[in-house]
View 1 (cartoon, rainbow, N blue to C red):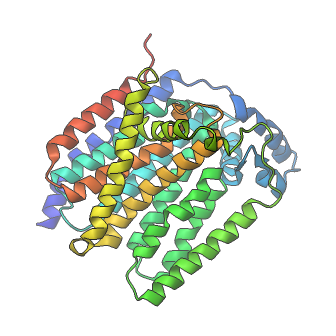
View 2 (view 1 turned 30 degrees about the vertical axis):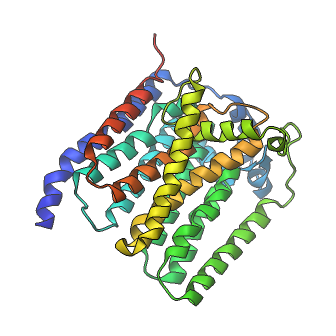
View 3 (view 1 turned 180 degrees about the vertical axis):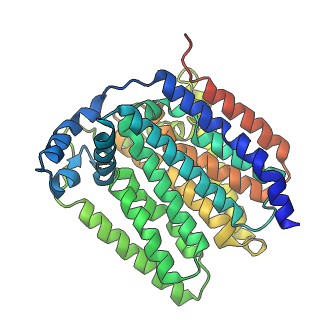
Length: 381
């Protein structure tokens, strides 16, 4: 019966799930330009050193603004060497990373074990696919340098899946640390993956002593990574004051909720709606977490709930740190930020499904709304 169900649903599902990436690939093919932009010009000197054999570890570890982009630089060099630095290779590699992220999150939803082929799960996974490939992220889709954003999301998904699926504690913890380490040295917000994964670490079944050991080991790995990251670190002089939020607390709150609401309604002309939706999304996430903690005996918390809590928490931490670091710039509606904040929508959708699994109608309406909002970002000619 189980095999019959798989064979019945897999082919049409595969076809449906190919729609969002196909739309994104067409968008990139039509609107992308094979020319360096902005930060990409900083890679020229690195490429020159690589080609002349003068590149060393410091060239890859060197700080770029507030970021350590060690692993993205490796990818940039590899793609440049095989393509004679055709920028479109970077764009299509971003699509590959998002495809991998979706497959990882899809696998995560199947680990739950309950109603693996229910309509609500199919719809929520399709919504996840639409969100991850959303054209709302158009700036990141068309700018090759931004593949590091998609790389960090993929690393987070790998770490969460490892923790949820492995049964061996030491192996599970140290394997999950690898993608978090890669994320940390891809961009500054990659460091947040260590904190976001902690609910998943804490949810692993075991005695109180075992849980303390796990958290302690994870914190030590976190501290070690942060220590390496900040060796020789210098705060960029052109960045705004990080304490600006103390002077503008209300504006800080608006900025934070705008970051979270932008993936749902990306429209600068209606900021109040964007802020309101961000606040609703934020509140819904924590209300659902409270509900699951209160009634966790009804669920397999480590498999069903904790992974999505980690995914959503990463987006919230990203919005918080971006608000503190970028408040002076404005840009709360910048499309590049939606790549991370989209993960909160994904997390809420899956947590909602787990608590109200039969609410297929609302999920269907939401899918249509998100899809149309995404398509609306395609420029008219």
